[in-house]
Image (tube, rainbow, N blue to C red; front, side, top):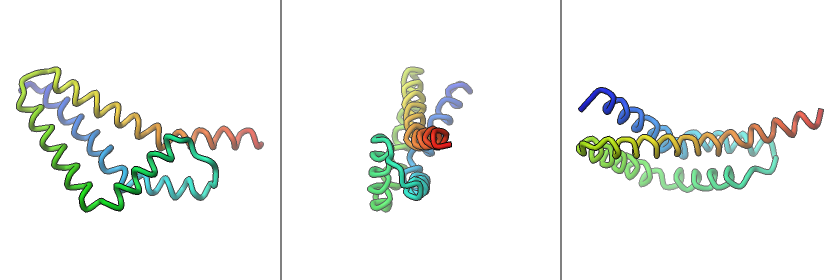
Length: 119
């Protein structure tokens, strides 16, 4: 396998790790912070927090299942000698990471805009 293919696979795995662990470890911290603000959150953020609470409640099942799926899909993609499969894994991880950022930072920008209007 070429170095670029290994790099694509490594970046994909890293991004999926971030996205997969965020519901259990990162989003609850943001949820507590947003609760302190007391503002109405966007629907996408409320959905992300709901998914996070479910993932955290079922972490004993969610985390092993996530790691098994990540390892299996990565091994399958690495085993295939097709660039399109690696690109699909890479783009799916980039999109999932972008969605995570939107879920977490959309309220921050929204609350910042409200705070500017109050001045």
